[in-house]
Amino acid sequence: MSDQGVFDTNVVTMTRFVMEEGRRAKGTGELTTLLNSLCTAVKAISSAVRKAGIAHLYGIAGTTNVTGDQVKKLDILSNDLIINMIKSSFTSCVLVSEENEKAIIVEPETRGKYIVCFDPLDGSSNIDCLVSIGTIFAIYKKATDDEPCEEDALQPGRNLVAAGYALYGSATMMVISTGQGVNGFMLDPAIGEFILVDRDIKIKKKGKIFSLNEGYAKYFDPAVTEYLQKKKFPQDGSEPYNARYIGSMVADVHRTLMYGGIFLYPGNTKSPKGKLRLLYEGNPMAFIMEQAGGRASTGLQNILDIQPVSIHQKAPVAMGSRDDVLEYDAICKKHALK
Image 1 (cartoon, rainbow, N blue to C red):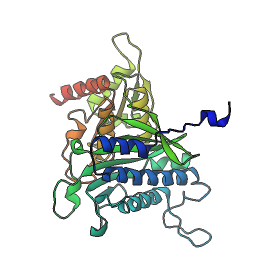
Image 2: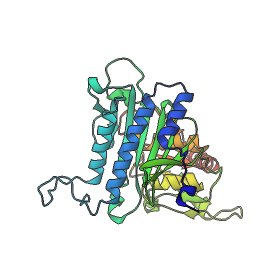
Image 3: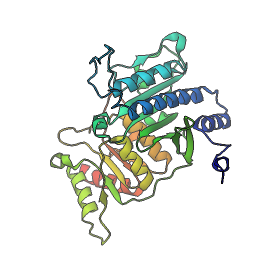
Image 4: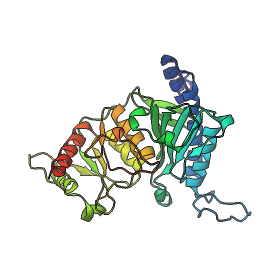
C-alpha cells in the first residue's frame, strides 16, 4: 500500500475538537483560544524537554553558558512559556503558577475572563533521570466584575470550566476535559499537532494497583496503614494489589486513569495536609478523574468541594477507581470517629 493509503485526511486535532465542543456549547470562542495557547506552550515545552541535555537546560537557574547567555532551567523556561502564551492570547486576567509566590495579575490591555492555575513542570526533580514529567492546568471563570485580584483564584474545583495535563513520556500526550468527559490527544511530531487518540476515556470501576510513596510509612496515619494492609494481605481470598509509584504526579495519575486503581498522597504526621497543592495539582486531576467516572477525595471530603483559602494551599489526595477510593474513604471516616 502506498503511503497515501494510511494517511488520515480528516484528522481530529485538539484545536478542531475544542472548536467543535465550543460550537455545541454556543461559546464565544475565548476558551478555545486559551486552550490553543496552552497547546502551543506544551509543544514548546515538549521540544525543550526532549533536547534538555543537548541544550544544557539542566543547569542551575541563573548560571551562564559559554556564550554568556543565561541558562534557564527547564521548569523556569516552562513557566515563562506558559505565562507568555496565555497572556498573549487575551483570554485571562489572573494566573497562578507553582513557580510564583503571588498570583500574576494580567495587564488591563491584554485581559480576558479566565483564571488559569498551573504547575508548569510537575515532577521536575525527576528530569535528570529521564522519568516522565508533565504540565497541569486548571481554568476558572472570573466570578465578579471588579478589578482582578489573587482572591479570584480561590474557587472550589466544582467551579472549573476546564482542566487537563500534558505528559512528556515515551510520547507527548495531552488529556483534557471541558466538563463533557475526558479526551486524550497525542502529539504527532510529523505535523506538529495533537491528534485525538482516546475519545471519552473512562476509568475502571475497580483496579488492581495502589500507588503511593511508602517511604513515609513510619509517619502514616493509622487509616492509611490499615488500607494498605488490606491491599497487600487481603482477608477475603482475593489477589493482593500491585504497587506502582513513579514519584511524578502526572505519570502516576495518568497510569491510574488508564489502568485503574488508586493514587494516594495522604497527609502524615510530618505533613498533615500532604504535599500536593490544591489549586494546580489536586483540583485539575480530581476534575479529570470525576469526568472519567472515578472519584477523588481527601479521605474525608471530596477534593472538588474544598473552599481554598490560599493559592498554594495543600490537600491530602486519594483518587482513581470509584470503588477503590470509596473503600479508602470508609476506612478514613472510621478512624476519624475514634
